[in-house]
Image (cartoon, rainbow, N blue to C red; front, side):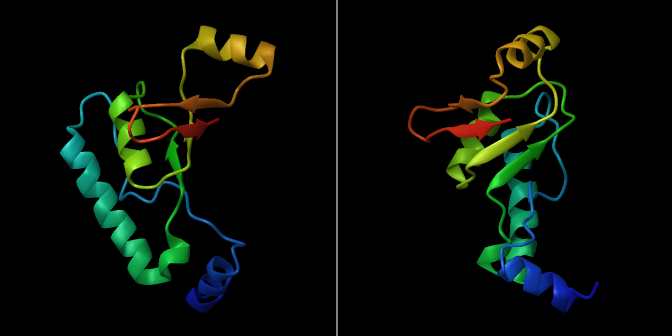
Length: 118
């Protein structure tokens, strides 16, 4: 597939990016400024390459060791609408699967809105 074909798919909304940061950061030990820096670099690169239609609106955190309130606040402040999580407490996951409520609204900060997670 050529870059022109990828551009066309992105413009048509048939291909969307998730995450958008340079890498998936650890949430337990990383200072929030480092998280912001790596999102800034990755999002700038996507914007420079694909324009506004290439900027993701869904975060991707599938393998950190826990999730931080700060990440939810930062993603909401950057305009993200959702977050795909990969790790939650096994008891919480079991109860959510049983009750068919895997999606949730995550409010990191009362002033910044909420993220839909799944």
